[in-house]
Image 1 (cartoon, rainbow, N blue to C red):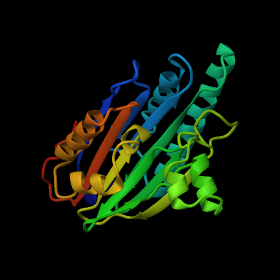
Image 2 (image 1 turned 90 degrees about the vertical axis):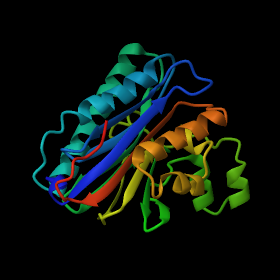
Image 3 (image 1 turned 120 degrees about the vertical axis):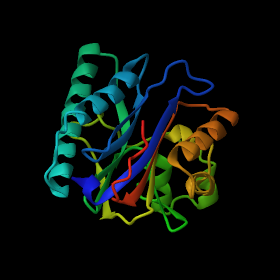
Length: 251
């Protein structure tokens, strides 16, 4: 089990924001099985909420992995099942596309994997520096990567919120993967785009680095809501320590 090598301090929070009436974000944390994720639903009426809830429900059935490879395989299988369920619901409703972005962290022993689809993000803070592990699946990111727009144009692009991938919108889920080795003191931040629409990367680092996950998480949420909270916002913060038998504070 992953907690034999590391223990985790963690916290999570989600808010409807200042504009929306319904929170279509969902998060899931299970330190015993090493699964942490944020799903941001999209679709008319309550459809987005259904999509993100389906992802969380299937992630909850992952069971106990026996290796890092097994954990990744189990997780990908559950996301595939969630993808099929979301597509079936969309067909039954005949109401257009339903889906949800996904940003996840998997931990087992000394290994981590980030799996994502869409523009929800996973960051790693290590030795005082922040790195975005995920890469946004958005129209503006693709245009920037192809050299068709520059950094300033990307920052002001009118269709910044147009995503190119999400769970439930294609026959099979389109997932990206980033893997690595955990170091003691590493802190992971998983969030929906409701946070990054209002908070810069350096502010994420300033809020989280050196603070307990609950304190940092609350700071980021307060910052977002104070600045208008134009979307649902969800944040999960996971700090890793070498196992020492000390009790873990979590949700």
